[in-house]
Image (cartoon, rainbow, N blue to C red; front, side, top):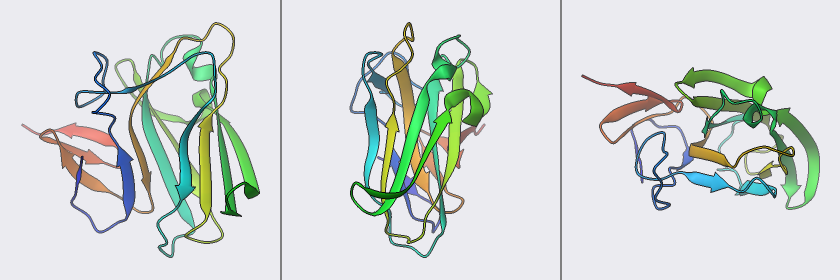
Length: 162
C-alpha cells in the first residue's frame, strides 16, 4: 500500500485493488453509484493525543456541474452510533485545490478523545449527479508525507520529482 516517511499516524486507502481506467495515482479508484449513500470510513481513530484529525481525498470531475453539489456527513462519538457531533459539508465548500479534473476535498474532524468512533459518509447524491470517482482517501493527525509510485505526497498533494 504506502510507506510512511513521517512519524504521524495515518490511514490511507489508495483503492489500487479496484482496477480503473480513471485514477488520480496508482492503478485503481473507487466508483460510488449515483443512486445511493456510501460510507467511506466507519471505525475508531488511532488513539494518539490529538484533538483534530484531517481527512482528504481526490474527487474526479470536480469541474462538472453536479459533482460539487454532493454532501458528506461526518459523525463523531465515544461509541458507535452514539454521536456527540454530526456535521455536513458540500464538496464545493471543502475543495482546497485542483489538479486538472480532480479536486482535493479536505476537512477537519475535531474530537474529544483520540480514540473516538468516526463515521464519514457521502450522502445520496442530487438527482442527475454522475457516479463519484475518488482516490487516495487519507486520515491524518499531523503533517504526513510518503512516497507512492515514485511521487512524493505531502498531506495528499502529489509532487512529481524529476
